Length: 119
Ligand code: HEM
Image (cartoon, rainbow, N blue to C red; front, side, top):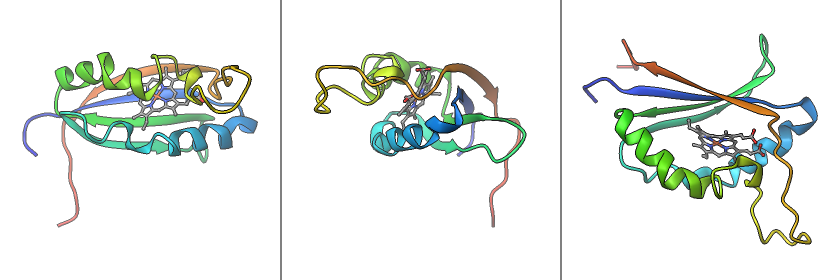
C-alpha cells in the first residue's frame, strides 16, 4: 500500500428499465481492467436509495496510471471509447450498435486521505 492512491468514480445515469442491461454489460467486461498497471480496485455500485445513479468506483496508484489506462486499455474495455458500443460488434445483430444503457456520465476524482481495513 503506501503512497496516496486516487479514486476515479464514473457516475452513470441509468433508467430503471435499463439496469439489468447495464449490469449484464459490466459482468461481461469483468476482466477488462484487472491487469492494468497501477490498478487497485473496481466496484460497480448499484443505487439503493438517495440517487438513481450507478457509481463505477475505481482506485489507482496515481493519476498517471489512470491516464495510461484511459488512453489505452479503457478504449478496448469500452470498444472505442464510447460505452454505447459496450455490447460490442459481432453480437449477431444486423451490424447495429446496441444502445447505451446509460443516458449520461460524469467523472469524479478524489485523493485518498485516510483509509482502514480489518485487522
Ligand atoms: C473511472 C473509469 C471509467 C470511465 C471514465 C468510464 C467511462 C464510461 C462512460 C463514459 C460510460 C457511459 C457512456 C454512455 O453514457 O454511453 C461507461 C459505461 C460503461 N463502462 Fe465504463 N468507465 C470506467 C470504468 C469502467 C470499468 C472499470 C469497466 C469494466 C470493468 C467499464 C465498463 C463499462 C460498461 C460495460 C459500460 C456500460 C455501457 C452501457 O451499456 O451504457 N467501465 N463507461
